[in-house]
Length: 297
Image (cartoon, rainbow, N blue to C red; front, side, top):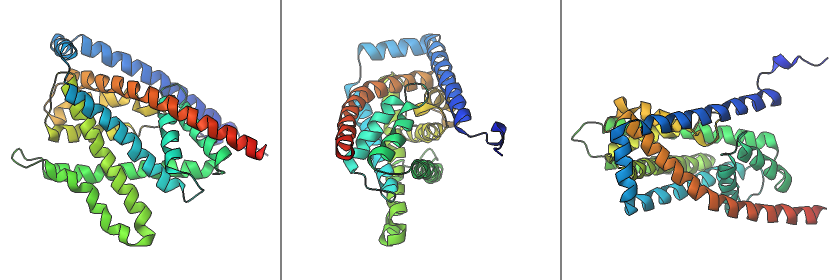
């Protein structure tokens, strides 16, 4: 006799409902963030001045950080996935780029599409891909904790900020031992990704007309990375903006509405970069799907 539907709160039907709720909540949060930032005259004036005279070095740093996050994320998923089946490095980069773009569509279409592609083209079971996602999320949590511990140690006003850049190297000694190598390399990449988010935060704040210190950028990156872990919300949309904004009293160096403006600025550039990367990636993947169909047709 089949168990009642309520026996499993995480079955397919419930997951679909949660994704719909997540998409609706994301839209509400983004609109609320835009309204809150626009209603603050000082922030609106700061953003207006930044738009009239943009900091091109900040824009370049922001774009570079977005690409870096894409490559580092792809590296993490490639390392974790290759134990379950054969997948190429460039292929995984295309999958992550395509899923990042598609995740801006409600229902997290990108994540679902990536699982389906790996099953159809690479023969990797969906269950294995779900395990990889959970492992990647766990690695992010550990990376946040590691970078956060160092950030806390250097939080004194007169302490230098640059030691945080050496955190990824902490994991390298583990790579000497074969059984720990994958874990160590994943952690190197994930920790570097948190630092890439720090560059993202620094550049987004500067581009929006509210410069912050490197230490503050690291704190914002920790908050943003944690917000990206929220399930059923594609790319942390809406959650990341408010998380960084509400962390202002804790991190210092900016106001709540400045955090909203900066994150909205960063999000706009995220999308502008994700569109061409994602479209090119989708074209590559569609050709691979077609070739696979011809081979096994």
